[in-house]
Image (cartoon, rainbow over all chains, first blue to last red; front, top):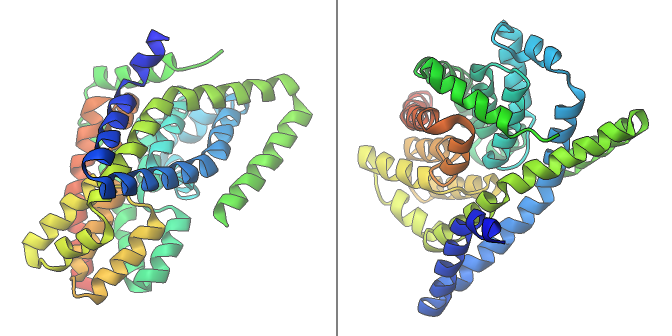
Length: 180
Length: 158
């Protein structure tokens, strides 16, 4: 029980803040709870398949296969696969991090996992269709092409700027979150 | 539509998985639940925080902040709002196109959309739990700077 309370500490503090908003500024408090409820429903709609796919990826794809396809020596194929995986995604960016942990644990290269995160954040296909509808093809296409390069550069630089022991810490952390 | 497709694909794969190996399928569901439960406190926190942020920074307020500014100052305001808020695409893009119609420049809109998607201050705790502090700060910092480059290219092309 105490452990549970500790884990949800931040959430509970925010809940208290939100409840006090309700008393101090009822209009904003009500709007805030309405938005939270709406977001919660959306999250509950999209997250189950994402996490079930994550579980199946973890169980069915052997480590050797993932190392070959997305590991440090996977070259262009690994980069392309990371882009495709991220772009085929749906759902908010924070749902990508648990998947990143599984990919890291299975031996995907850090740079490729960062590319996956980059693609998930900006080149998701459903999002691009939305952009096309509201911003037109010139805006969307320009942003897409620049992003393709940018995601790669950001991933490359982020990995390069990390010390070996910092990279090890990321991998150890990913291993520690495994379930048997 | 896309969510629907995601459910169908997941359902088919789950069925095939169950046909092939019952225990492995059970294991994968267990792992799915564990990964979800692991991150649930942060999810709930993020959702509450976004709710509060957007209650203050509703589309009208954002429009007043971004639409009224121009040049570098406008881009800076747009980038800061984009970095701290987390708005789903189906709200963000119609908002962006409304902003354009009400007089905001393409460059401000580009930097807003780009930071909105790539820079996540609210989601930083989850990112740090995955990649550590250093990588999180570096990635978000680079993405922030990159958003200005995107805006510059958009301003040049359009």
